Length: 425
Image 1 (cartoon, rainbow, N blue to C red):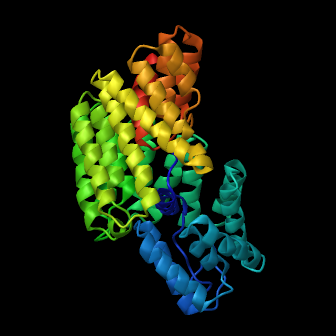
Image 2 (image 1 turned 120 degrees about the vertical axis):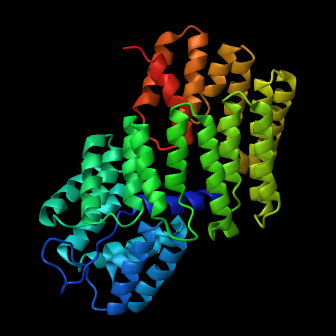
Image 3 (image 1 turned 90 degrees about the vertical axis):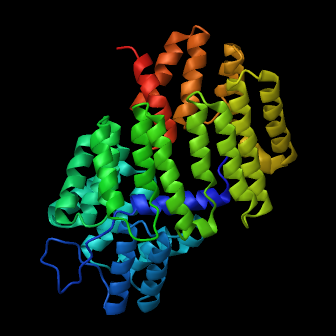
């Protein structure tokens, strides 16, 4: 189903922590010409930005937002402070600060102006143009860590893993005291298929995490590394540890750990334990039911529960019961009117899944072509359906798309090993 507003907000915060790429702020008096100088005359604003950056480096979005607000209050004309305040907030609240940062950057130092120019190019889905600027900045400011971090992140987006690794290693040479760079290096090795090395970096990241913080990137990456190797038991053990830490974190006060339980349910489902999978999905929804989440949001998660149960029932060979779950989901979508229409790809996902499990590959293809094909697992189902329908060429094309993807997600971890094995040549 389409991600709810609360989940989008959660993912937006995660994106801040993974994509902001900032650290190593220095004042004009401290600069030796090898780092970007940011433009503020306020010591308080400068210090609050430093603290916001440390929060980002420690995956602590709540503290980062507090410090970014204080930085803007101390110096309303500080471009970078407005940028930080924007990245810690959902789009409607962020836009005025991004606009203000763009305006104020015109009067900022050259390094700050060019850095923000590149950042906003990336936000406009122009990573190649953004990377070109960051590479220029790396020549002008060879000791600026935040520039190296952004080169690494954009290189991953552009599927240049060797350049990404080199950039993150340089950033770590400049400062390896915080967890984020270790997570990023873990991601690179994960995509390279060196899962043991990836785990070394994820564990290093977790060893440096701040008290009371449950970092999504390191825990999830660690779990995915096991999934890629077929070690589902260790992956689930990792997610269970994540769930315990998350329950103790401030984030759990705003959003229940349903997403972790659903990930556990997904792993159980796709690895031969559908009965246990249903129990995990039910545990996840129980955290939603007990939360203060708005009723409409609870309804969306209820739909996800039915989705998981339907897929599990199909794996158990209970095809009639499974189809009733799909029909229930379709009814929920139809009753939503215009607001329900964006959820239709989720219906086609479960319908295609069930048709495939029941041996109707032609019907599965038609449904799965209407699922979310940005999702590697949806693509895997489509490729399987093409294979069973005898359309080998289409299947091979989709398998290649999965192998070529660089998503750091459970969906890719579940899909990549099979797609790589099936891909010829």
